[in-house]
Length: 171
Image 1 (cartoon, rainbow, N blue to C red):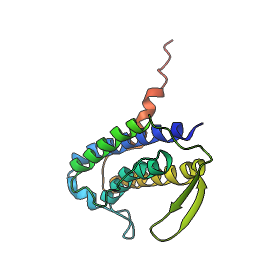
Image 2: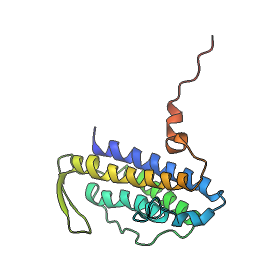
Image 3: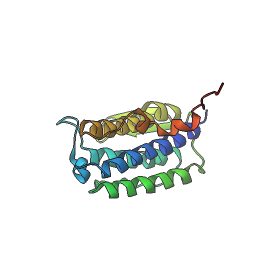
Image 4: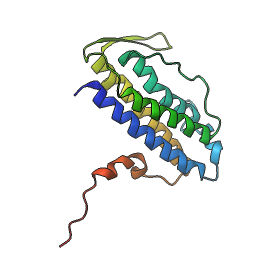
């Protein structure tokens, strides 16, 4: 399966998931204060998780689709602002679906801010880094919101699965 077909739908669906979670968070009694919540002291708060999730598709598209992308270094200050960021990224992802991607075996250099560097093929980069990191930060956002008392469950994490649900058979 071409890498475009693997990553574009995932980004769209999971950004939708995050938007749905933050929509529910807006109605929570803690509201915007949830953006400062963390799972553990040594982990980033919800606001940073949202920033990472919104940056990751663009950062990957620099390598995979040859676009220029400037990562946002600020964090959203309100849940409404976070949802605006998600909406903008969803729109961009939809547009990026029309771009040509590099070949699956194209070399990708991944350099991390801590100085570590990795040499991967485009396929390896998508499978082992881009998707794994994207899911990690979405899952962490979900876990933070659960920890803070938001009434969410599995269906809030995979709402797009409802389109595949089989209707009950009538006798």
